[in-house]
Image 1 (cartoon, rainbow, N blue to C red):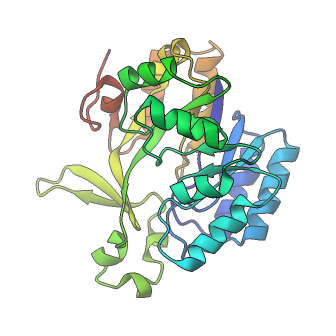
Image 2 (cartoon, rainbow, N blue to C red):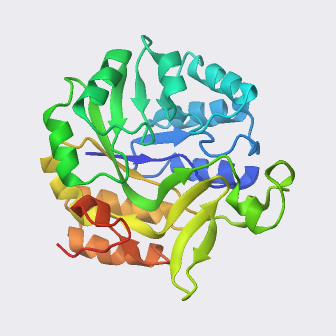
Length: 296
């Protein structure tokens, strides 16, 4: 099984992003996803910068994939997505059906986790359009995965979101800006003050959600390292680690050690608890509420 590093979901400054991907070149991951998937206003890096990072990672032996925005709201965003899809060199992860339409019939693309692949018909449609890998929606579990794997078109790989705060929803409104009582158009990039998103707690003080601009995430950190053996039995090809401000590469090393049988999966699960500041979760995998933690 391969390991992938998903796109950065937060707004980090340029130097932090460049340093992160310089380290990613030596990380024990096989695939690296690049680009802005949450908010088009986040322009710390230009398209040329992302392509330069992609070239360096490719030279380091990584498979590079360029990810599109998940929510398209303006003609300018559609134009940027079109240019990304027409880059002519690197594979693209489509997170919007518009991107699928642009990529259909091309050299092949990745169907991202936000395309709502819930049945075999959708999976077949994406395969006919040219998808060569699909990412299981984070709210689906092992039973749905097994059914979809049984109907998976020949030659298509499967990827599962295995570690990180779960991306749950997107909206036209910027929740981080709203929390600061400013408009989305005059946000002042307040999301940059929260390297791992802004915590939203219940009235009882329990961590509940993470506000990340227009994206809502789980407060708990999904941790499926102990489920890697089951994923392998189900024919999963790639396990995805979502970047966070600290510990991403240590997390990747633990996952790699488990996959290489150098570390017991339960020991790996225990070690990864240190990288889940608001507890861990794996409920969706077992058909339970996503925030639940199940000890199989």
